[in-house]
Image (cartoon, rainbow, N blue to C red; front, side, top):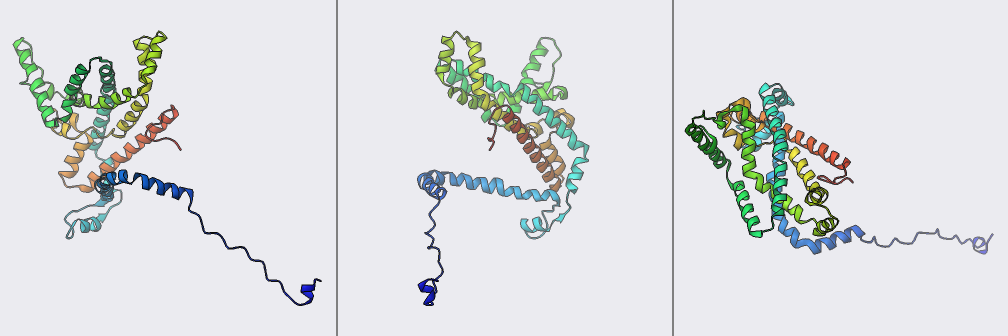
Amino acid sequence: MSTREAAGVVAAPATDPPAPPRPVTRRRRRLRTRLARDWPLLAMTAPAAALLLVFHYLPTLGNVIAFQDYNPFLGDGPLDAFLGSEWIGFGNFEALFTDPLFWDAVRNTLTITAFQLVFFFPLPILLAILLNSVVSGRVRAFVQSVVYLPHFFSWVLVVTFFVQMLGGAGLLAQELRDAGMQPWNIMTNPDTFIVLVTGEAVWKDLGWGAIVFLAALAAIDPNLYEAAAADGAGRWRRLWHITLPGLRPVIVLLLIMRLGDALSVGFEQFILQRDAVGRDAAEVLDTFVYYQAIVTQQWGLGAAAGLFKAMVGLALILTANHVAHRLGEQGVYSRS
């Protein structure tokens, strides 16, 4: 027994030293540093982010209407109608999926999308390559101005232009009559309507679609072309082994985004020509929603069709992005 124990002195229990104040983590310091550095940029993007929140993300709450028998005239305001409408679950979807007109519109939409993917999507790539190969800057600027201009025309003006050129009283019909031939009114022929709308889209948006590919071509290192030419590679080999691989990430990205809009081929272009060629040829999903939901005031049915279109687009984007990852491309987002 020790002397302290013999004397009856009890040692105090050992206590841990007080913990030092918790330091600020590296992540917080990094965030504060970035905020202090980038606050002017954040301030400039704040209005755009607010507009996106107000006009895009908040309206998505309206998808609840797809599960209601929505009546906008209930109560004293939109909120009362939103909260007071009867909840019917998947009733709108059942009515939608059992409507043969809906599936006709979906079939027309997917057919037009597939046709335009084959005959329209590659054209801006070819135009960008041709413009990039033009040596004269003045010629390139002139051609770009000419092919960009139709993008700023409304669809009313575009359809009117095609009517004046290809309609029954248009320039082509008059020339055929003068030559003693039977005129062919392309604007009212349902069998060639898919070619007509694709041609209108090409004339309107071909030049505008080439802008992204021109930017991608400008990012390719010119030294690669010089090295390939020094090794004896011709123009076609340089195109195949340098230009197209340089464009491939952009092509994959835009293709994935286009697949996400597979059920959105347009509204104004088709509704302007629907009566001329008939519903069977020109009815797409957007015009179906207008005539079967908005005109008849079946708001829940229209919301169900919009939600169906969004879910199909999301599924196509995720699937196409997964395929892009399997092929070694980044796609819309990279894998974690």
